[in-house]
Image (cartoon, rainbow over all chains, first blue to last red):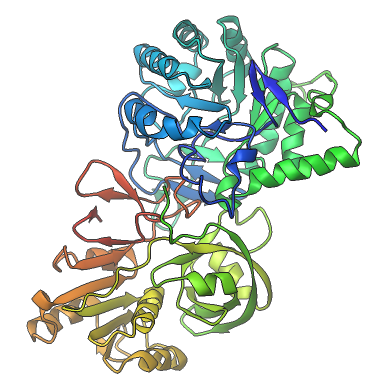
Amino acid sequence: MNLEVNLAGLKLKNPFMPASGTFAYGTELIYHTEAINIKEFGAIVTKGISIKERAGNPPERIAEVPCGLLNSIGLENVGIERFINEKWPLLKKLDIPVIVNVFGEKEEEFEFLAEELDRACVHAIELNLSCPNVDKGGMEFGQNKKSAGRIVEIVKNKFKAGPVFVKLAPNFVNIIDIAKECEKKGADGLSLINTIMGMAIDVERREFVIPRGVAGLSGPCIHPIALYIVYRVYHEVKIPIIGIGGIYDYKSALEFLMAGARACQIGSMLFVEPGIINKIIKDTEEYMRRHKINDIKEIIGCMQIRKIREEKP
Amino acid sequence: MLSREIYLKKIEGEILNNIDLGDGMFQLLISAEEIAKRVKPGQFVNIKVQNSLHPFIRRPYSVWNAEDDVIEFLIKVLGSGSRLLYERKRGKIDLIGPLGKPFPDPPSDLEIILIGGGTGIAPLMFYAKYYSLSSFKIIYGLKTAPNEYLYSRIQEITDNVFICTEDGSFGFKGLVTDFVKELIEDRYIILEKSMFIICGPLPMLRAFKFLPPERTYVSMEGTMACGFGICMGCAVKSKSSNNYLRTCTEGPLFKLSEIEI
């Protein structure tokens, strides 16, 4: 039975990996093998790394909503220098492809990060062009076709060590247009989707539950939205897609593969079930045995294109 | 890296009993040998209140007591998670833990003043019992008189307990902060020779900022998505740097001198 996938040159032993921001730097849980066996993961995706260390947003940073949660962490991270010196040496020993998620407030910052990570020879980059929890950068670039394409061009020019993925979210924009532009400018793959902008209000206090007001919505409640976006974009681009959004078991993960994703990332559910990725791998193998599937690639993108009537319900 | 004292493993416990203690509080007894053997005072267990996608995240509860293979919790019904847990009288329950840093070893040269508010009394009682403390006091604040059983459990640990109720139905009438101030004025608590551990709602913790910050510990409970250090949700502002600390891994107990509250 073969679960291997090729993700723009990255060879993954299976399509399942944690989503950025839900697995810290990937090094924290290495020795907690009672719950998680990281060595089985298809890849590791780090927290978003910026040039300078960032403290993140003041509390409250988390609010629970039906079948999901809102977060406003604000890209708290140790910065590129400490990441390369303290986290990367341990990560590269794991012998698993490592995708480093990066974030910048300006084009030059993305350029600098790409250069540094190229020098460190990390295996791949994921550009965070869609974080809703910061005032500058991130989503600003992902909301605009031209600026998203420009960042891709800049990063591709400097980062030669591996593929560059672009992480997008469906906030007020036509994600298909932006995805196509990223592909045109050389992106090697797309990570779809990031959290969706959301909000919660405490009616007793008449205050936002999360002080910033807006926050990122994740968890099973966004799964159908993410799945539909992956399905739509899959039929518009040729580059591989990583499906992300509310995966909570092997079925919700396989739905992404069938919709066209070549791999998928598991996020919020890791907080609830730290061993979820290992369980999804095991359950997928069982599914493949049950359905006599020899190669996972047989199901990737197996849903036929249907004429979609978006205007008329 | 995470502390060696946390045990990140899913454990299936069995609810043995779930008893209403009045004032919205209940006692939950769970059989979970692996946790009972490992847990130290101040640590918490992350409970999946029911096997469904909602409520989505686990609920962290401090351990009240651990004996043989049984762990005990003192919980107040506050939101949807605790409400569902209150209704669970029997059956299997999904647990992760123990998590968080244990309370510090008791110092031999200081009197330990344990100040609890509501269910915040739980880890303090476990602490006193676990270390068989000799030189200590418990000061406990509630809205109204404690249930007889709860009171008897405290008395099993020590006679040196002071109860404050907001409605005056038992013990000292008023807030626990005012009472502690009186005890200090009367030199019944010698400020220079005491260490304080405070566990209760955030406004209560804030009201104790007058205590010596190097010898006062407060137990925080910021909303956490994971409980084991990867979501960065339960942030507490550090005093020494511009950064945040995580309640679940660097805490839940912090020195007043370490954090801004």
